[in-house]
Length: 310
Image 1 (tube, one colour):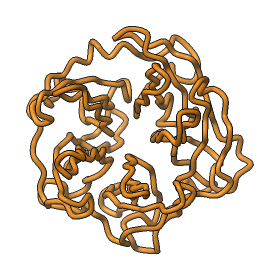
Image 2: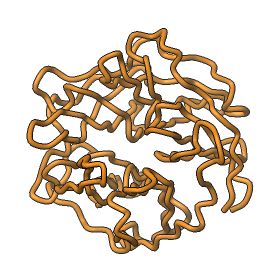
Image 3: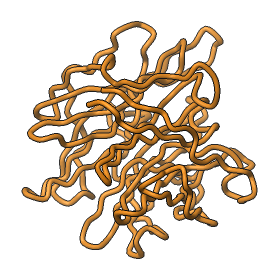
């Protein structure tokens, strides 16, 4: 496939108290044929993330129609799994509600941080969200001691089955600079209600590190394509940070990595010249858009590209 980059859409200008820097992990939902709402996480002056949104024109996503003046989801109570940051990961429309699956960030003492998954629900078309619970819907496990997070959830309406692909990890590795960074992979779960999930996920066949430089597969985004699945995900490396990867599967469990076919890479200069990551896809008006982050995990904002070749 081939993507044509269209440039930056949004970067916080620092005027909002909760959005001083970053617009991380763009998570879109189609409000109607004219409007795409993109949820994202911005950081306040203390580097704590909250979730807000921008509305963009589906005919030209560079046109920002609205920006949330306040966060739609704030951090959790002191000591909770999400007390030092919340970031969006996946949106599901269900029974006139929006289910927001999000990443909860908590600082550690003997390890740098923990990431587990929460659920918040909106009954006002996504203008605000309320937590389903103050505890994670994906909490720690033996295989996911530090990370069970960044879920992508897909509701198969024909069978009332909820499918989830998520990030899991329980080890760290050290960069040449001495900084510890997490090691994690993608796993799969399914549920009957989208709320209660098994404690251990299925390992995905095909998701092995190709080189010693790779140490993480981040935030999957899944497209159901005919009888199979397509996945866009972020490959984290020690030397280059993130790059966008691509894989295909017949059953959602057994995958073939086809990273060389993703059709998009860093630019020679500018806001996405050092890394690209956290891709999400929207199909509308006979066009396919990719929304993604660039340098430093979203510090430089949200940009988009248009699919010009399958």
